Amino acid sequence: MEFASNVTSSCGEDGIIDAIFSIMAPRHRYCVEFGAWDGKQSSNTWSLINQHGWGGLMIEGSPQRFSDLQNTYAGNNKVSLVNRYVDFDRNSLDVILTEMQAPVDLDLISIDIDGADYHVWESIHKFRPRLVVIEFNDTIPNDVIFIQDRDMTVKQGSSLAAMIELARAKNYELICVVGGNAMFVVAEEFPRFGISENDIDSMQNQVFESKLFQLYDGTLVLAGCQHLIWHSIPIDQECIQVLPPEQRRFPG
View 1 (cartoon, rainbow, N blue to C red):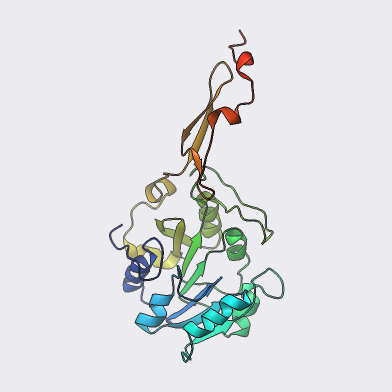
View 2 (view 1 turned 90 degrees about the vertical axis):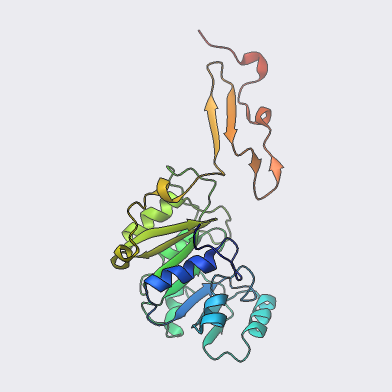
């Protein structure tokens, strides 16, 4: 991608975020990241805070990682730190952001929790971030709407198509896809970017999709990605057959 570059991000998000805010000027220079780890590793906000003078809110549930987060932002009074796990009840983002007096139209929120990302964004009602960076499962085909269970302990991810559907319901438009992250801006700002096509196939080049099709004799054929990406295990086509070899024949 033309603007992709990393400071602490993983797939070029830092450079793209900079480019977005050069067109859509920030209002508060305020960002939110949760599951913040140490505030730097694979962070989509570290550069904004440490190189561009932004403030914001970092949320981390793990006591050990929160200690690292405190070390990262020691002495920075523009950044608030919260040691809590986000949920959908007393620790919902609406609750935490209200407690921390975040701007209703904060500039950026980064949602990357390897699972219930869809449900976390869906649960935000009081706040309307101007740019949402959210993780999706980029092995799921573009034409499939898949939403994982709402359970925060489940680690499956939801499809890009599902994220786009949610975004439209919240009045956002897809502006970029990079790695396993989709970026959405509030719909009223979208025309500033001069993007003529932001449909899913224009934005997402599906390279990790696994395809399964049937032959006349009942053989299942696997095409596309043929390994479990997050487990580094190859998928054996023979192991996914429904019929044993002696039964694979055309029924006519």
